[in-house]
Length: 579
Image (tube, rainbow, N blue to C red; front, top):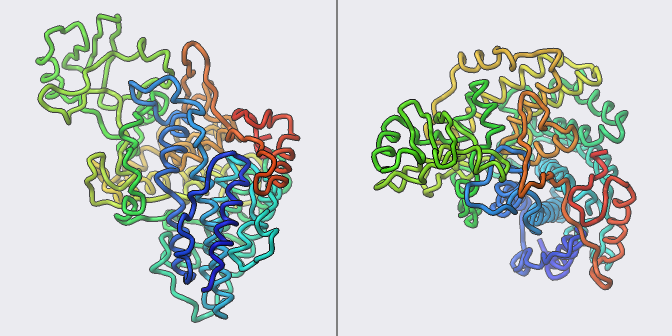
């Protein structure tokens, strides 16, 4: 396919500058001349590699949303600045990936048109659009208005100058457009003609299974409905009613095989060589999250985190190497005494650290980093994350498992459906109780599959009895008096690797919090100042003369019309969907 590469490169750069930030995105596609002839299936494959990248994980997960949502606490020794909006790069890679995916998606449709084989590539065209909408929802959660319908026009061969100045759409416009496009994609996928291109080798999610893509599109419609719920409840309920209707039952997810997940079999670290700064370097389990996992004996905890090294043998060796049993001494039962600070605590093999920086010197007994003579035996009590869950390889770079990017799992769909049925009495094939129970069961099975796929350390397959016992125990089994909180709590656990969705849920519902009962957050204090969780990026008005200046300014002015948005550069203001 012949492309006007220089013009396209300019359009891409402009679309990124149009984010409203004053950051330098000029490094995107630094060698556009190499894009001269591209086939649709290659573009589709490339688009999927942009769903989860090392830069995104570093800025938007490891060092921010995992901590903001109190799944983890930053490791001892990190400075006091590492909780809130610690870096101006938050959101950069996410926006960059969104723009890459958009350009690929437009290219796919244009390439098919030029080849006069649109029927042959009909499946790829719709699959790539569904994938882009999923990334768009994620990007709008932190950026608000985006260039979408008017963006990437050069990728369709448009050489008009105004193709370089895309207009932005508000969240309301985006969600309306995305819902309409998802409905269109569903109908077109249902009507795929025989003899189409076999995309199995290029499809990381479903290996070309059209039915599974249709189900994912419907599931994404329900996610769109969640974003509209606070502002336009009637529209949200209308979408939910269509998705959950009895007539649509065969076109929504029904097992974990329908989960919208991209699978990276041993090639994630090849595609993302920059992911050298492992989550293992940065985070440990938080007390709020680990307290929940221990209280309910959640079998997912061994897939989320590694057990610590406080075994009887290591404790004996640790005590033998210390001359002063008053500092960091551990008795045979795991009781730790730190007499220098008058602290004592019972430590098990599953522990979380406080998220509050000011409390660390008061709540956590000090233990030496490693056993003498064994630099690999870390004696910190707080559990480290399973690095293989995030990279497919361990902290040491070894491992034979794969990596995965969850977009919208079957469990996630169940929890969304349960909420709509419970709160709005939306007609459905299942009651809120059944959707919730199905969701909890599916989440355990899904994470068991994830653990096996990534070959996490100490993996032991979950048994049916473990799943049944967990689902039926008091506090987890459906309680009508706590139904909504139970839905939110289990959705939160399910989103451990989809932290953007956990963050979006918190912004929409306020769950978890310091007062929630199933999962209770720490009050985060740094130098006696309570910390707040950011809700959007810090925007900045463009300078006069900047590419697409007028549309950038209009975008920010329109978002700022809502009082809850606060100032443009205030990361604690609310976007439109959070009202």
